Image (cartoon, rainbow, N blue to C red):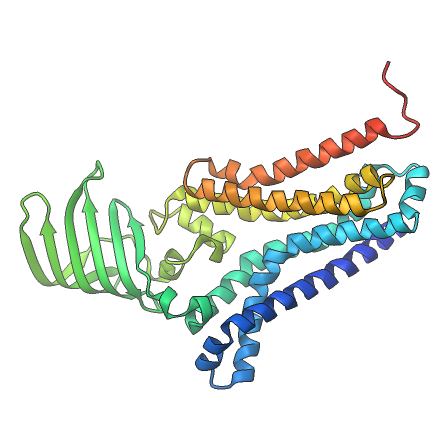
Length: 360
C-alpha cells in the first residue's frame, strides 16, 4: 500500500501547492494594486518597496488561503481518481474510506502543519514589520489609536509606546478599589522605566472621593507592566505567537480580557486540525456522490460545506471574544462540527453501499 500512499501524496501535494501559490499570488497582486501609492510613497525605491510589501503580506495571505487550498486540492485529487475510474477500482478491491483517508494522512500533515508555523511565527513577524513600516492599513491612521491595558486593578490608557517599551507618552491611569469602583485618575505627559521602576512625569491627579486635584513633577508608579512585553500587550491577538498568548494569560497585565486570549489560544491549536478534517472530508464526499453525476456534486457540496465552516468559525470566534462562549468551546466547536458532518456522510455511504446486507 505504500505505492498507493506515494501516488495519492504526489497527486494531492502537487495540486495543493499549485492552488496555494496561484491564489496567494492573485490576492497579493490585488493587495498591491490597492496599496501601491502608499508603498511607493513610503519606499525610497518603488520596485524594492513593492517587492518588500508583497513579501511581508504573503505570509498573512497564505495562512488565510491554506485551508481553502487544501480542501480544493483534496476534491480535485479525488475528482481525478473518479474521472479515470481509479477510485472505483480501489473500492472494488476492498479499499475502505478509512484506508483511503489513512493513505492521504502523510500528505495532509505536510499541508496542515505549515499552517500552524505560518500563523504562529511568520504572521506575527510580518505584521510587526508592516506596522513598523506604516504602509497600507498599517499606516499612520492605524498606529495613532490609543492602547488600553489592564494592569491588575488599574486601567491604563497610553497614546504612544516607544519601540523599546521603556518610554510611554500620554498616559492616563484609572485606579480602582477592590470592588472595581474608580478611586483616582492620574494623567501624565510621559512615563519612563528605569531600575525596575516606572516614573510618571508632569502628573495631574484627580481624587474621585472629594474632587481634589493635585499636581506633581514626578511620581513613582506601581505597575506590573514589563517593558519587554509592551509590544505584545498592544498587539492584536491574531498577531501574537502561541507562547506570547500563553504569557499574556499568565500575566496580570494585558490589553484584553483573559477569555479573548483563551479563545485565540484554542483557535490557534485547532486550526491545523480543521485543515486536516477539510482534507479528509473529500473522501466520503467523493464516494458518496461518485455514482450521481461524476464529481460535480461533491465539488459543489465540498465548497458549500467549506464556506459554511468558515462562516461558523468566524461566528464562534466573535462570540468567544465577547465572552459569551467558553474559550475551549469557541476554539474547538468548528472542527468538531466539521468532524460530525464528515462522519455523517461516511456512515450514510456505508449504509447505501452496494452489496451491503440490508437490515432485517
